[in-house]
Length: 328
Image (tube, rainbow, N blue to C red; front, top):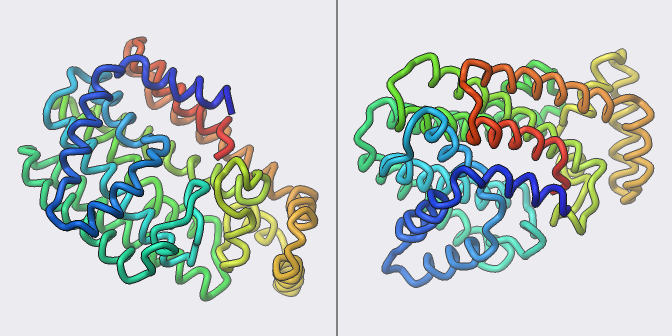
């Protein structure tokens, strides 16, 4: 845990003052005259989380030039959208815990959770107009569409109990990578007109987002509940196929796939988490996913090759290391 905090701190060194300014913008953007919204938002933001996406936005802008008012606006909107998706995710997944605390839907029930999530989402979209940059607006609007599509794809795969590795990458790209990629791309957009720099950071963010979700998939299997702040084996209970399991099934015949899934489901219903973990490890699912994370990590670092060495570049590389080592 200490090493992860150090890596996150390392990410923040080049943007120490800019991050403070972001927090002011973000706090101001959440102010409303509706008491219930204020209560829910105050509860959510009290546990700040990693604020990973706005950090990436600020770092990307600094790598390409100077952090400016549009960068602060964009990073605030991105975090607002992220918080909205977390609230909606907990409702869709029926999750009672978020970051070790009761989720919004557990305290205020689903109706309030959905409406507050909708408010945050629509508030972010309406504030997009304050960013006087067509490329940034187009990126954010496209991201909103991808986020919704990714969530629906996940529900669809859980219903069908079938998802190929290719389909997994598509779903993850929309559900997770889209917002992280938007963070790095918009950071670049607010600081430079250079299309090559924008593309490089967009690709970096897309890959970082993919391996971020892969790491979440691993932690759902191998993580400790007290560290990740939510129950493990949650994906399996909800019939959500993740890469460690998909990789196992992809090499099996149809009848073997059914047997494997049936065994995993049987163990899940009986809360035999250690047996599930051992089974997936023994069948190579964890190692396969770890190898994929390593491959994509190396590719993401190469996306930054065109940038000269700087503290911001080191911090973006540290973000990759942070993902590899994080335990929550």
